[in-house]
Length: 112
Image 1 (cartoon, rainbow, N blue to C red):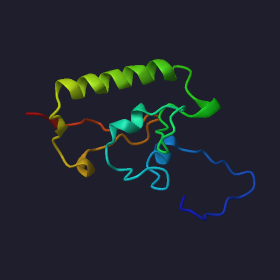
Image 2 (cartoon, rainbow, N blue to C red):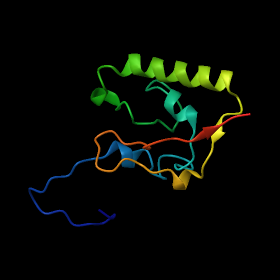
Image 3 (tube, one colour):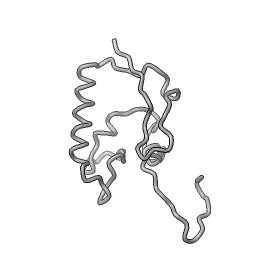
């Protein structure tokens, strides 16, 4: 729904963390892949916090394990393949439609 849309009493509103992660009011250049967004924690003083694991009392119970896994995997990947880059324009990468977990259907990468 666009900003300013009227909601009827009793209507249902479902907040989307996927949409929140792309909110230009919360994230500088939200459509740019910034791995640092994934590594920030609730205790960070950084203003940009990625919401994939939830936030505050509404965080995923497996959040700490998943966070450690993601941070470790990305750090190792970038250490071993420092020239890793997208092999396609980000706007051309097809995304899953209608899934509870969003993301690309495939991610073409290249390195030298």
